[in-house]
Structure formats: C-alpha cells, structure tokens
Image 1 (cartoon, rainbow, N blue to C red):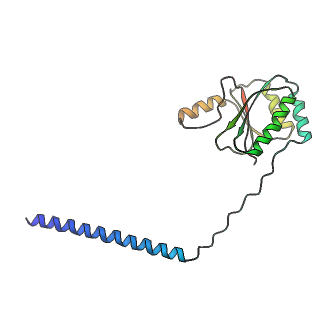
Image 2 (image 1 turned 60 degrees about the horizontal axis):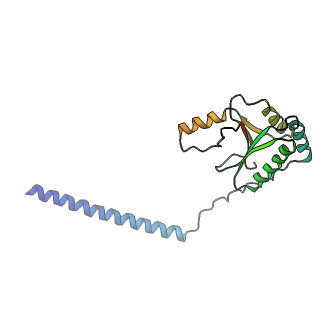
Image 3 (image 1 turned 45 degrees about the vertical axis):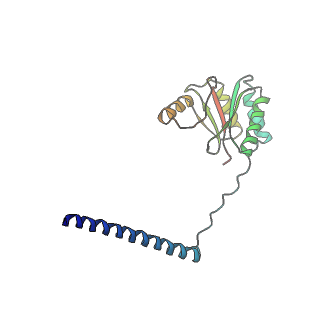
Length: 187
C-alpha cells in the first residue's frame, strides 16, 4: 500500500513540476517578446547590393568573327537551351542564334532550362568524342572573345547523376542531340 502512495506522490510531483516548467517557459517567452518588440533593433549592416550586370550583346566585330568560323560548316545542326524567365539571357541567345542561322546552320533545338544555372555560356557535347564540326562552334566563340565552359560526355554524366539521385535535374539531351549551347544568366 505504501508503495502505491509513493508512486502516486511521485506522479503528482512530476505533473506539478511539468506544469511549473511550462508556465516558466511561457513567461520567459512573453518577457523576451516584450523586450525585443520595444527595444530598438540592433544595428545590422545593410546588404550590399550587387552591381547591376550589363546585358550581353554581340558587337558587329564579334558577329563577323563568329560568322567567319561558322560559314565553313553550313547545314550543321545546333541546339540551344536558355535559362527560363531571364529576358537578358533570351535576348543574348537570339543574337547567337541569328549568327548560326546567318552562317547556314540548322537550328535543331531551342529549349528552356528550368533550374538555377551559373552565369555564362556553356557547350556540352553529348559524347566523349564529339563530331569534328563542334570545333567550329568552339572556335567561333573564341574568335569573338566569348568565354565558354565546355564539357564532353554530358549524356553519360546526366545518366550517372540520375542513377545516383533520381531527383537530380540537368539539361536533358534528346536521343539525336549531339551537343547543346546553354545560355545562362549574365555574370
């Protein structure tokens, strides 16, 4: 009988202790809220706004330099992908596309990139051994002084990433896509 009384007293003490603890925490929270709402906010340095990035545009000289490199390969295919919802990237892609069209290249694809991308222009070859005419694309950008990031084996890279993480999102190359010129945001 005495052990039952001892258990009941212990349970009652635990309940009283829990109620006291919750009440004390609520009172401390109320005190802190009141103190922070009436006290001036601590001085925090205002974030430094990034300098506006100038819109990219092809000069007449750049356009001509690219044309000289691309005109030797008319009829070749070209694929583009452009970061979505970015008017600057879309306008730059249209300028680049125009150069390829003027040089006689065939636009095979023009898709949107629907995930965050780093700034810049990228050329991703589907296979480890891209076709020889892809050198003309790289040469055209180099002649125009446009720095690109390029890579080979992109199709296998995407496959491996998706195997590693099925939710991974990247630029999807169609079965016939040989490479893609990706226009990211200005940087």
